[in-house]
Amino acid sequence: MGTLCGLGRVFEAIDAERGFQDKKWGTDPEVDGCILPGDNVHAQHTVLSEEVGEAAEAILEGDRMGRLRELVQVAAVSAAIIQFHYTPEEVDTTVRQIMHETRCL
Image (tube, rainbow, N blue to C red; front, side, top):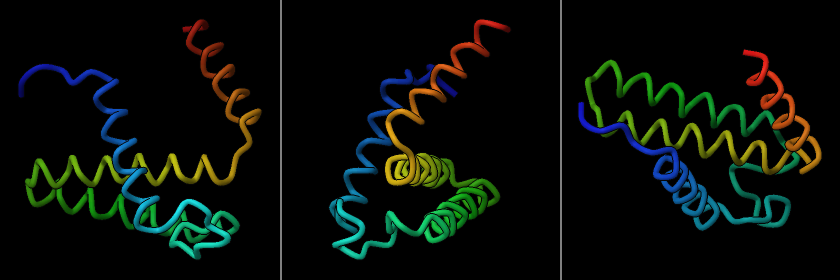
């Protein structure tokens, strides 16, 4: 399978996909009317579910690179949901909770 991919490289791929999404759909969901509207979390979750389904399809087809692309899209759509629907304070709280749980392991 090769060398383990560093997390920084994974985040680069997710960031590149988010940039693609922003370029394609716009960065202001309320003005641009993109497919990921900031005020419609249901639409975003529908897109996320679609991407998960496409990743599953790539897995079943044995399409290794297609699976990678779809998993990056899953992560990027998840990131968009967090960006559009959660405040920095809410994200910080979650990070602190995760860090606390990690110390408890």
